[in-house]
Length: 639
Image 1: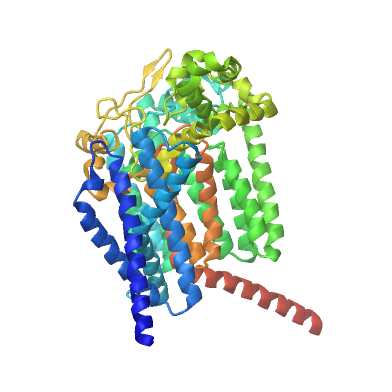
Image 2: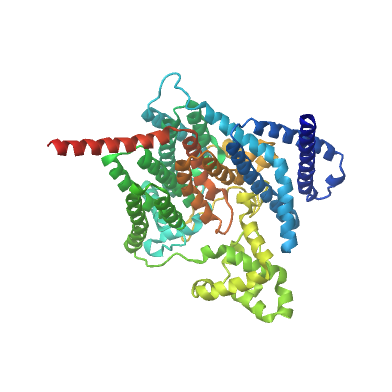
């Protein structure tokens, strides 16, 4: 009887793996079938693919059986299944958008997307399981014992800051005096003309900084020298804050290799080094956002008593300044503080509430003070926040506008209210700016209720176009194989458009241009091939680290791992960059400069996750408070 039962179980397991293998082969083959001129369904390679998937599923099954606790095994399977499915779903939708221009329509189409994603997730399941298995194995080792000489955190900070700064100097010389791109052409003219010309389309604090360095250039006798000082200023700030980040990693892990790897990444990775010597506001925002995150860690896990009070003051001052460089940052911070108010222990709630109120009100107060100081009461334009609805209306108009003019003139007139008729053909899926500048902003901002009713009306009739417009606009954040984010305005070393913009746009009315004069043209040529020519797309495997989606997915994976390993204190801190990322999903375009804050914070978050020192430090802080209160009560009792 037992022999028959064993045979049945073996047959059942083999049959189940065979069915899952066929599903996995179908999922992978479907992705290949979306490529032009492809016959993967009829290829003999399917046999090899089936053998590979079957073997991996068999190995995964054996791996899962090694988990003794049934609850832990189910927990592993659930988390692996979620990760695999979401990854597979992103690949199916991403390849459909990339090759077909849209996702499958209707209820049946969306159902087929889910079925294909489920099939593909079977092939992804063994790899996701390997990821979680590796995390479990590393966690089982516990904290590594200290080997060799212990470095003081102050020494780590000083050495890494100096190394990072020295590595930035050649890049600065290559792009001397500074990379004058993105919105610099507008800001430099406002800065040149005077404070009364400042317009809050760009952060006023940032425009004022540009004006300050122009004035330094006037004193020196050269605008080039003055604006070069701005590059050095950013380099120094970046080196100091990133030195603080590496010292924080050392304090959390007490391991040398994470410090070395992080320092090399911060000092040598082209995205980081090129953005540091660029005039975009995202450089200073990234530096200040990272510092805010580090100060929050310092406050929560390394501070007690008077030091914690000091950290609260520093957090409010630095946080209010940081939010001046990104209008959307205040929303991320406000929601982050609200979630902390819910998630943190009861005895910490009052402090979190006060800190959150001070940050939000302080940001508003500082903004008003700055505007009053320069003599302007102009508000930042709100139309930027409507980038997604603009693209949704524009996509409907682009694909259905002409037929609506004949079949439903009323709805066509409604579309024209939000997107001018002469711009219906200007719809460009990965970039809202082509339409945004031409729309009637008051139609979106003046009557929110009417806008919402109109938006729901059009969306109800064309749900697929609305969904696809959002997915297309944000594709670079979630689709691993997307390349539109790196070439939405083209690419090439001639135009200096690519994954980063390094063109010179410094024409000042009544003066001329601030000239770009490279002091290291050989290095500039190499960097231009990467950031303008996008040559990294030709590098096997290594090209992955240049994909913006790697960093957004890494943040997501890290948050899932925090929940899987029950490291809730780490999950809470990861909410800050995640919420900031959420605000970017409503933006007009995907660009790597928007991901810059997440890129530099990820090593700190990874160190935070990998170390139990932070939890023990937090517990130790609480124990010290209890001991202190106990002694105080005892002294009063015997007093």
